[in-house]
Amino acid sequence: MAYDLEEQEQLASLKAWWNQYGNLVTWLLIIALAAYAGWTGWNYYQRSQASQAGQLYEELQKAVSANDNAKVQRAATDITSKFGSSAYAQMAALFAAKSAFDVNDLKGAKTQLQWVIDHGTDEYKAIAKIRLAGVLLDEKAYEEALKALSGDFPEQFAGAVADRKGDILAAQGKMDDARGAYKLALDKTDNKNPARQLIQLKLDAIGDASAKAAA
Image (cartoon, rainbow, N blue to C red; front, side, top):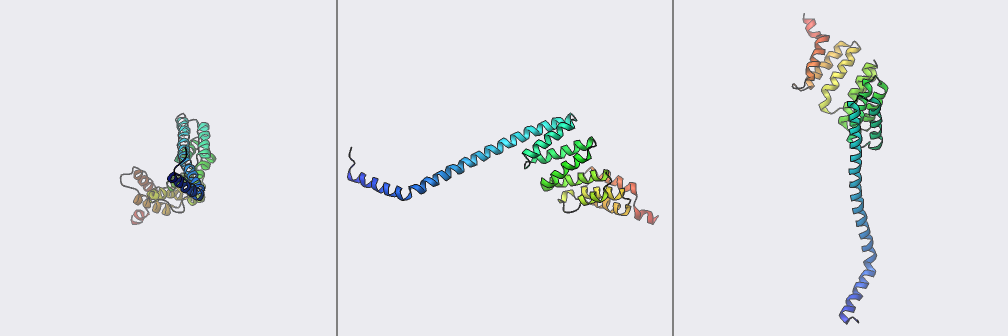
């Protein structure tokens, strides 16, 4: 069927427009589809990664409950190597450090804690540094322990950091410095925090220098 004159003009105009802009429109459509596919694919990947990390973390928790340190370490290594950017990895490394410490594998505990310090968020790093200082204290590596507690910490950890410093200083026989650290720990620890009782007991145990002087 032959087109009438108006239809031919419309087709000619459309053909001319397509010749000028068709290639651009095609590429814009391809880019838009690729972006959408990438976005949906990334979301699926993220959900899949989180699901896999969660399953491994569940296995780690079961191993912790069973006191199976070897399995805890394997699960933690899998999580940190495959899903290192997830919160699961940081928690897994902390659990693995505790598990290693409980079986007197101090080297393994330090390795896991150092991973958190190198890769974790500020809060997890703070926890790992305080625990690492505790491991070094057990090894009598006092200067290294104090070094682990140097630098900035989130404010909510100020009391715990001062408390751990007090432990290290007391072990070194630096009682005046230890008292100062414990007093700072009390000042920085909330009144409702049960840790205050233990800090007070440690402060009482080494005595108050000012009270002794007055006596």
